[in-house]
Image 1: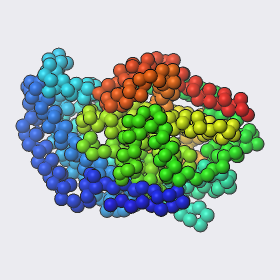
Image 2: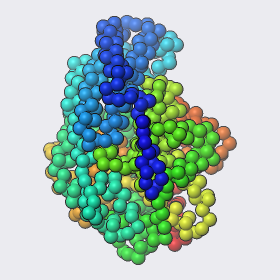
Image 3: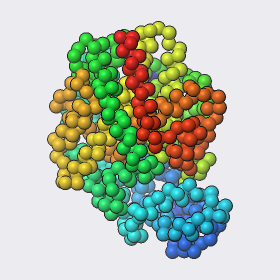
Image 4: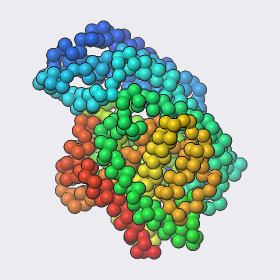
Amino acid sequence: MAQSAKSELGSLPEWDLADLYQAPDAPGLKSDLDTTAKTAKDFNARFAGKIAGLDGAMLGQAIAEYEVMEEIVGRIMSYAQLLYAGDMADAENGRFYQSMQEACTEIGTDLLFLTLEINRIDEDEIEAKLAAPELEHYRPWLREVRAYRDHQLSDAEEKLLHEKSVTGRAAWVRLFDETMAGLRFPFEGAELTSAEVLDKLSNKDGAVRKAAAASLSEVLGGEVKLFALITNTLAKDKEIEDGFRSFARPVSSRNMANQVEDEVVDALVSAVSSRYPDLSHRYYALKAKWFGVEQLNYWDRNAPLPEDDDTAIGWSEARKTVLDAYGAFSPKLAEIGVKFFDNAWIDAPARPGKSPGAFAHPTVPSAHPYLLLNYLGKTRDVMTLAHELGHGVHQVLAADQGALMCDTPLTLAETASVFGEMLTFRSLLDQATDPVRRKVMIASKVEDMLNTVVRQIAFHQFEARVHEERRSGELLPDRLGEIWMDVQADSLGPSIRLDDSYQSFWTYIPHFIHSPFYVYAYAFGDCLVNSLYGAYQDAQEGFAERYLEMLGKGGTLRHKELLAPFGLDASDPKFWGKGVDVISGLIDELEAVS
């Protein structure tokens, strides 16, 4: 069972994965794995080569069987991933994770034929089959499966790519994860994890921030050749597969998975990057003025304001802050949220070997999500809790859609998380009456929004340039550093001083490795939430009910359909400008009080 970690922050919870499986060698896990492997082979024997000939009712029943197996495989892999994330330095955890990947990939090989054969059915035939209620239920899933028809390869090629993934892309991702988890950063006589040393960059003491930046630069720089090799290999791997699948641009496959059109993403990137001078450049010039300098060193970018007391926030206070904010918006939202705290669904303490950063893992509809944090008591950590709890609540609400349709595209997945942050921020701001405290809070929110919008779009631009240049040959570590510095200088502006010690900081961003072109989803979600929150302020009556209904749709509807009840349309080029205007307005307010 999980135990709580004691610290000055109070009792920090650790998750209990027994709701998935009791242990890696639990009889239930082995039984699920063996039974599903046999069931998958039987399913293949009964249906492979026969999908087109099934009537709508039979095809719906076949998909229902497939969904059951997908959920069991999802439960096994969720357990393996979470166990691994809890301690990546444990070799046994790594071995178990790899062995589960291989076993589940083998099961997936027997099931691969289903979607391939569905995509070879003509559109009019599929539409006729959808008259059967059994198949009509899966219409949203079929829509997303069939979106890939023009990018599908032969059965033999698809099988090869599927089976080779565990020794290809997945192996390189594991190498990155274990390398990063194993790094230790010397600091004042101690050896810190990446999460702990990155936290020092928001310390009130400038000397601490500078020392932390120097440690990060030295250690990351010492591994830059390995990280460059991983990045080059995965970029080339993506280029090869994209070429076979006839994707026009490196970002196109991600956009399709996100159920968003290329032009919508282009409009977002353009709307944000064109406003860099009005957003990040203006804010950091203001912050430099507050610190009495012409330029801020890059390690001072996230420094607390001079007026910020930088008091550590205990876990119980963080819990109350977030749940109170959720409850003021919707009692049901808080009711779901409290389950994460009352049960062992959150792993909060930072510890050696643990995955850095934070995430919410949905697991499977028959279980519940888990949240991973590295909670260190900063205001940003409270906002991270609000963010990840938003994901978790969303995943609980969407679970009723079933294993095949509960997953939400990344672009919309970030909506609930960022909305949770906004609720928490607005609740705290409303309670603050001291002008100095309000200034500190607004500045902190602006910095979070710049990190979510400007910084993530800059990350996207870095990825786009790296993948584009990789098509002409391998990029040396120095060239990757040059692209990084160029993009960062453009996005952060002249009031942030960058030097050569910052060149290796691209290496610790896990999204570049785990999910190429994931990062724009954060900016998508933040700008969308700005507009969504504006709609809430304009017409609160019935908004919470419509919002929860939207979250409960999971992946069954696309962004245009989900936003229609709120009078919003992300395909309208003006939409993104409105979202950016919210950030600009907060900077206006800071300039006024300064």
